[in-house]
Image (cartoon, rainbow, N blue to C red):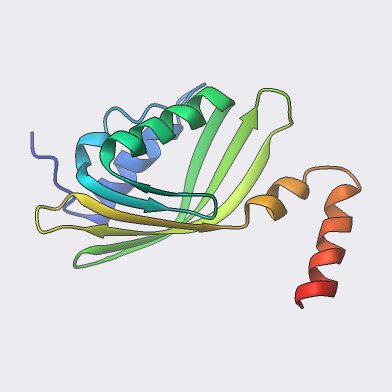
Amino acid sequence: MSHRIESLEQFIELWTGIYNKEGKPDWSHILPFYDGDITFRDSIQTIHGLKDFAEMTERLTDRSKALKFLIHNGTMDDKTIFIEWEMILSFKKYPQSSLYGASRITLNDDGRIIGQRDYFDLWGDIFDNIPRFGKLYRKFMRNKFG
């Protein structure tokens, strides 16, 4: 089996296969499509290497009660994939929340994922689900940033 991303449809099938089962996510089928030198970055962390990336996916799995991932839009151009997504998560002690974001995926010459940059507003999306606090947070953000 070739572990090469060849189309947007293939990528979406692999990506959504991580999350859309009942219960905890499983990355084992998609990890072979990541290059050993993957650089992953989001609003929390920057990770280098497949080993550290796999450990990060395990931490997310351990912390969550359930995860579901929806892709709303996507495009692929040569070696770049861009997707808009919604991650629906349920942590052990907190109600279900949705995070909205986008990811830029960069492929190497072998068709494996060498770069992944996730963009999202972690705190805003989580705080929106906390009664009264979400409104205070949004008011603070408007007053300070725009």
